Amino acid sequence: MKKKVLILYTGGTIGMTRTENGYAPQSGRFRAALDEISDLRASELPVWELTELEPLLDSSNMTVHEWNKIARAVAEQYDRYDGFVILHGTDTMAYTASALSFMLGNLGKPVVLTGSQIPLCEVRSDGRDNIITSLLIAGAGRVNEVCLYFGGKLLRGNRATKYSADGLIAFISPNYPSLAEAGITIRYNESALLPKPKGALQLQLLENVPIGVLKVFPGIQFSLFEQIMTEKLRGIVIETFGAGNIPGDGGALLPIIEKAFCNGTVLTVCSQCPQGAVALGTYETSNALKRAGAVSGLDMTTEAAVAKLYYLFSCGYDKETVKRKMEEDLCGEMTAP
Ligand code: ASP
Image (cartoon, rainbow, N blue to C red; front, side, top):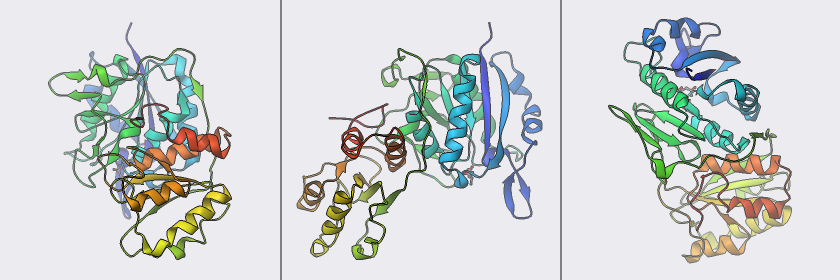
């Protein structure tokens, strides 16, 4: 029996057309664009069906609301298909992939996000290969996780980050090996794949929890951020230098962090370096963060840390549990010690 894959088109460059105001997605046009690619009917490919999300979005406009729509669509159709391909804009694809990896618990089928840097309507579009190879991966059923295929590589979704604004290899996974490489054949890296889970799929929808991201830089005036570090802020990802270091600045940040911590905000420390891990306490400049109650994001991407905060708070956990779980590996998003 031929495998069946559901393609979910959410918007993004891949299906955009030229308008007076620049590229934009146009509802109802995408099916015709796919119909023009005769290879999509090749016998080697799984049978596929297409669903379009309404409204189609440039992925810069994605919110928790759209993540819920996508996750719900997968969960509702889960038993009818062998795999899923989610066509998505590249700008926030790594955030959506991270969020879905937490939301779709016990996932036992491939969910492959892909898109393109050049629209399908252009001759040099990279979208054609990205869709065809993603369909093959989704139909093959070798991976049981949310992943991202782009430019010849299959990456774990919650390890991926957009690295190029205009290159055709737009994503990297700096702290985890590729799940597969598409050369003449698609070679899976078996030892990097998550095992097939036991138990039924578990969908966790997300709430629009107030969280933030703060990137430190030389000369940062921490006092300006005091206003946002109130009890309303449930969680914050602090993007630090190197292995978790912040400017001393006469200790200006620490009282603010301590106050935020006492207010109930969960502070997670990630690194501005794409590769390597946070090690709080290695330097004096990071030890203070640890003493102030921050937790280590280890080698998580900022995208994964943001999605994980949304997820853990949406599960209804108390602050202490969220703190503990931020340092635990839930679905391959971090290398726990
Ligand atoms: N702005 C587009 C988007 O993220 C970029 C792309 O798809 O490559 O939707």
